[in-house]
Image (cartoon, rainbow, N blue to C red):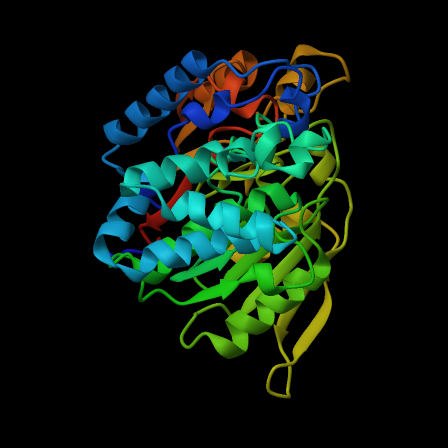
Length: 418
């Protein structure tokens, strides 16, 4: 099996990346839940038991379809075991992403991470976050003027926050053909998730030969949930609250001019609505069969779809308006007439409308006509099932919390070509 190969969104899944939520979600001092789970304003805690049940259900569905599951912490452990220099690369990445200023803090964090006795301990320390009390700067009054004058830091306060949303594995990285696309995350606290994957890509034997684009070097943001592989030679990227047009320009130039044999000849871009909690294009559009899509009705409104192709000069782009009708655009690009669109149009406040806001359009396609969906979306699942789609529902309430669906929790690494 190829280590990286995704050139569509419906080919039979061969391999995926998941992260099993763990103790990193439970490291929050009292009253600080909203600071490090800032996108969950109505919550005061994260129920790890429920999240693990959801993770296990997703894993069971994937395994039942013959999908190989790679787990983030396993890959990190294998990477550190495989290459001695991976340890320093990982630590340097944490420091680079931390936004810590000053030698005392930086050296304290470095000493704390380097003192990890085992690789598993190092991984845990990175995932669980680093407090002021961990780095040796909170001293007795008799040993520090800072402590003596009551200017010392609270030892339980985080200097580096825990990576408590790492289970959204589609956000920090995406796949364009056989290339890794590393994100530049909107929230800086999530950039360390990208750093973990970059260390894996540099030193893990399964990934180290894959070409990549470092989105973190861009001045603009881009996140994996906005990147969709339309077909062998084209991507569709959402211009959203998390992905900027400037990053799409840079990605297109990289795929066209810098990555040999990327196979990507055209990048399309489409504005993404901002509705409720949904952030990325994959929360509004999912291809579920050769001739079928789930598309949120807000994305079906007339909108500008842009086409980016290589320009005449090396390193340049040629940009034009491709269409203002999503259905006809998809039919043209995919060469499939009469697409079947499930848009679940409903009145605001209705049950069907609530399900749309709860990730009904964010399914994970396991193979043509076979999908994994949010169990809570009973009506939309029933509509899809009656239309001949094989539906595998799983609970997602705790992990996803309305910000998407199963596709947000799973990064496809290998899919069969069509």
